Length: 182
Image (cartoon, rainbow, N blue to C red; front, side, top):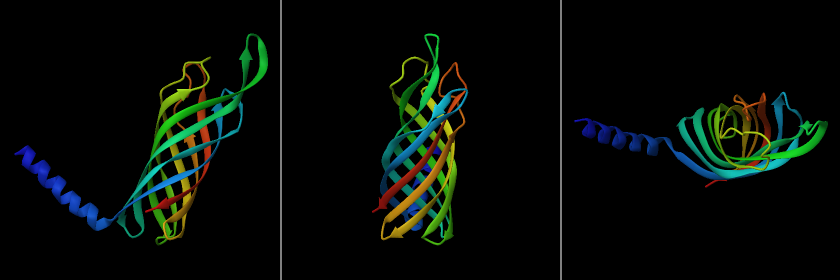
């Protein structure tokens, strides 16, 4: 009985998804990243790129999920072998999955977005500290659909979890993106 109920729900939801509309796209852009917390950090510029899926629920609200390769970090000044103030670029590469609620101020044109971002570490250029493999963040921003499927986004993401075990250090990233919905 449970299997029949599950199949019925999946079948009904597939019609609901088709009726609401799903847009697939790609996006890429610049990351202006630094660390917040106990690390004395200057910003560095990196990039992000990936896929976008927008589920249009009602005319003024949708949910957008993304799968991004996200390169962040900072230029950290820390104590290395008794020398304070050694500056070094720290690059952290993540697979990030932001899930954004989008509220349209102008239908199909201008939207505000907010939601969580889940990031999984894939590469750590700095091995001096124990880097955590998961990063949780809160994100918010704005999107403008320019013409046809072309769009531009600006977003700020603030880390909620520490990047390193021993140090109060959270990612802070401002992103500028361009993309295209097919």
